[in-house]
Image (cartoon, rainbow, N blue to C red; front, side, top):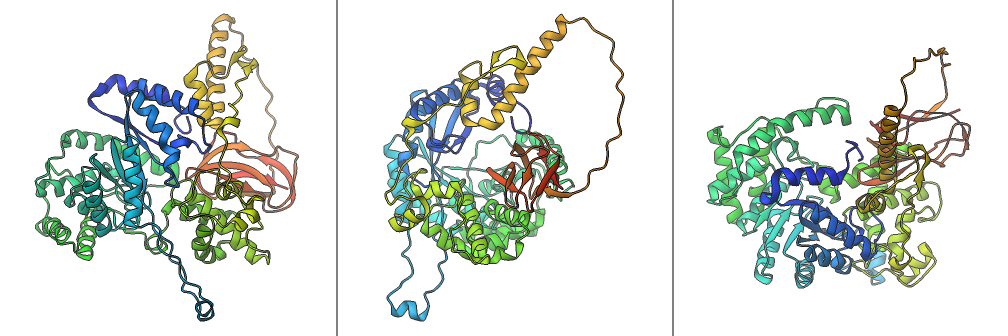
Length: 563
């Protein structure tokens, strides 16, 4: 719906009709939040799981941003009830790098907080999910921060203590991905998540072609048809080029072509694969990483993002913070915002840095840095999402939140979970412009409205209008086209508010002629899995709106003009 103007149910059903049960189609679900950000009641979760599985979904990967097992119970229940496979994910995260207490602080007894995200913590979450009926457990390293030794330890621990298959999911942004995946395979992991060549590495998962080489040398049969993968890569290369142009407005470098079935590796590169395997077996983390990075460099994959690696935050979180500050013309405070992340995260209960909590924490760190710069107390400016997180609406946080801090942010001292009994379904009005039909005509369309309210409303309205107009056109005699007198538009000058990052316009909060104040919300841009509020940066009057709801825009695109 967002970018291809396609009904996701139709896509799922079409794929399933073509491939049948030979391939287990998989989707990612945020537990009680499903694909959205609101906590849904059980009847919505039930309806979604039933329709998804009936339409061909085989595996549902279920996770919660807080690793709150209570938030995944319902989805596990309904996925299994309707014959699906429940793949339950434990979100891997790290403890913040807290600053060392000062001399005076130490004298007063202040100590650095004790580690929370220990091996025992992750094993406990995996055991709880297994007890709920999980068919498999995934170590979900959404930030790519898990190094080889740590993932090997967790894989061995999980395999020893739970009887269901263990999967490993990671990204390559900080430079650990390929090395950590090799370490997981050597440690006995059952499944690994990979990407095809032209979408692999960098911010993606390791390339299946490189994993294939490692597995072949280790005597592991992946069961993957690599001839089919090679054919798919031919198409994916063209799609990658198209995306580079549409998203970035330019061609980007691509990795050196490689087919492990037909291409012979140079002797020195082949030796690097052997060196990496030997290092992984010997638990030599540095040597494993070094060999894998040299392999990636040879093929021309992106170098590690050292800033993300040092900050130990997801790349998307960092990009969102940069975009937020760029839009506010306050890039100079980025270092301070980065410094504030550990304290903001700890105050909010130490949530794992996974969507949406990573973006919530990052945005609040920016707000705190802005407060500080303006001479205001920190947390003067707080997002509604941060308030919801601290209040308890997203679930139980790994660390209990100080009641006085919660009172400061939310006005209440006790944790206040979201009450799904008060959930209100999205409105389903009749559309006069489409002959009076309902916006959502069946259960699947109702579910689209619940999960993606703004996007689905636009999509379904357009679909219904087109169907109505097509029918009306058949019944209406053709008339000669009227000539229209074209009036040359006057050039409009004024201050332009631009898009800080690529995304899709999901709401316009102003209209031409509206008076606005600096800081007032003018557009909502969906990007990086979050709704980003784009604000006016000066007082004035809206003299032109350059975009429409539903438009996809590039970074720097003009949104509105303020006179």
